[in-house]
Image 1 (cartoon, rainbow, N blue to C red):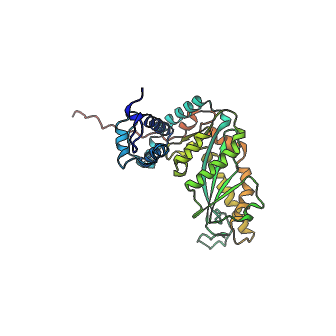
Image 2: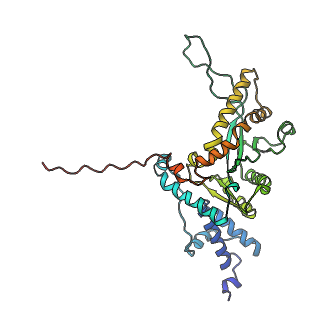
Image 3: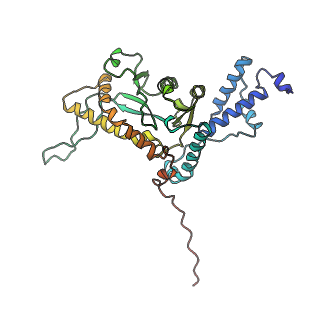
Length: 349
């Protein structure tokens, strides 16, 4: 028997069944590390209403909605001090491994279908420090040649625990595409543009479509696991919806812990930066005085295959304890939590 609220809903309110589906969605997102904000909850409710009534919920609807739903609650999301995070790492890391294990078991996700993706940035013409030979009496550090501007380029990379790299996805600063970017590079590379060379929500969706295109045929089981951080472009409702439509389960790593939990950070990004800077330095020593986007792509092409080798990728998953699942691989790297010293016992004179 349907309740009056289900059969005669107010145009600005959700039905009981709609609220139940919204609660289930909020719980699913938050348990995977993507707790939605008030604005995002309101947006989800508006999407449900738009289908039926073509209207929106009221200004204070979210607060009232939470107050009548015992399965959800409101909490403040506060940035945490990095030192405090380091000290409390075990309390954060252990639940993370429990979450990964339970999600993989629930959806039957195989190691081959486990992916990590993240972004890293480059300043196009900036190389690394190199040793040079100078006159013995010179005390000031010499200034090395930097063959180019400092324009920012973002790389979005994704790797599988099977040791495979999804074709690179770059974000250049600009308004329009240049066909010359594609002439001498692999056909499966993708380039997007944004005002500053950084990721936007729209670019995040474009990358996700790129990921789906290149991984669907490689999927062995029924679902893919995508491990990521909490960046806004990865956390949008649209991003999560597309993942759900394509049987991609997303898990958000604990904040401030990517340096020990993320395979890309542990296994690939640092050697990639070093190799790229070395390549730029070699160009400078060859009297190439300017590196533009085309030269950046050429320099990246020269180094990326060696860095994103199958062995390096697998080593990143192994070192972060993700494949094979091994909590001890991470706990062994953590700082020991400092103990508050006990006050001295009173002494009897």
